[in-house]
Length: 365
Image: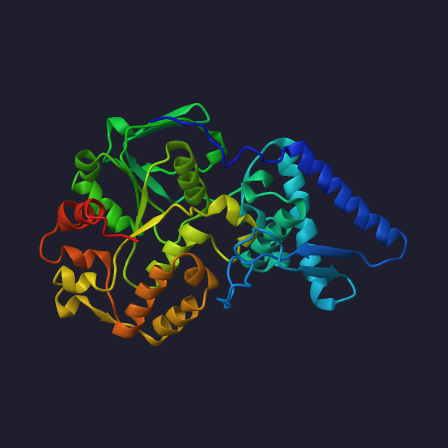
């Protein structure tokens, strides 16, 4: 199967971003020259709230208010200093057509930035101000995702032929915008939470017997993994299933794929994958697949707090109420378990029994 990309059709050009940077800095200089304190308005976004009523507008990609940064507030001075320093770096990257990681930028002024999170916030602010995505700034993350299966594509003229070795792990491309010539004969895409499960499937030759594509973000997925997954969905139009641990963090990772993260809510329309289907693990799977009691772990106090907070997210009630019921059931049961526990009776049962029976029987939500 082969198709055309659609998600990235309206990406801003470097020359447009450089023009916006010049206009932004010129306005600040003019304010200072005229004795005025610059005021920078930054749109604020969110992809969920704790209001599950019908008047919630988190599902839209529009701003949910503005934040004003000004030199008149002492707490904003350092933040503006960081923002402008990072903006200078971004301008240089765009002018020279070079790329840098967030960590590279941090080490340009470590004594001033003090912490990586300060740089991350500045980059997000700049994306909002320039109305673009992080990769448009030539700021990239060090990729950590892996892919295998019935897939072939090129990235910057390099061919990645997973089809010839469908059970061999390849790194998810960092420069997703350069991925072209995607070809696949897969029947579906399977996203797994952890590298250990990914490796289990590789060892079991899962892709050979099931003709699929398997991807892992190795925990919480990075931007490259989420963008690549979105590109595959847009291009190949295949069913996409997600397999995560039956615990609060597994559910949060599933939600990150489906709805995006709160930190990058401004870019959710490019990073979320609304087509994703939850394959498991579900709370009642522990009974159905006869997990021994020692495989079930009690929810900690932190687990319970995290679960209760997630139950308040408006998008669960509005868009996937069945997901919310499963999360509620996990909280009521008071236990959690890992995907690896499903292999307690047979090492390859994930590959030979659990996943195939779930997909063929439609046991997913």
